[in-house]
Image (cartoon, rainbow, N blue to C red; front, side, top):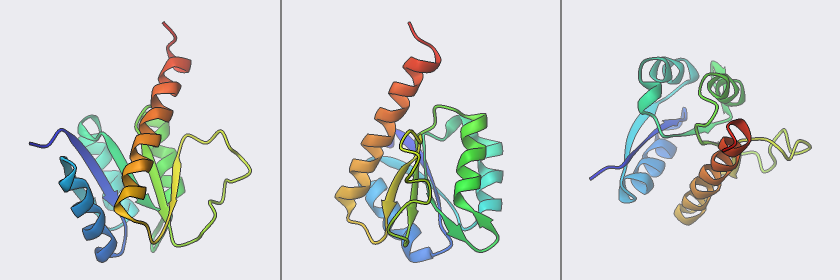
Length: 132
């Protein structure tokens, strides 16, 4: 039984397949996009059913950070993980970012840990945005 839905955005099919396998083994339903345009369309049509996004930073025809920032504006509490073959995130000097960064290649446990971290960040953000 699948409990949450994750949108995977990466131009490399091998990466999408790997992430899909890890997530499906952990009870996620997975939706894939191979570029930012497809991903934006998916979020526009199914945004309220997406529980997590894992997106590459650099892809032909689009930038994962711009995509993630756009999603953050419309869905402020959606956990987002940015992945990249580049070892250091471009926003490292801004530690308050609401995204979690995972360098490629990564192990399944690293991805699962990043998911937990992304969800925790959004729990804290929720408290800031709408304190009890």
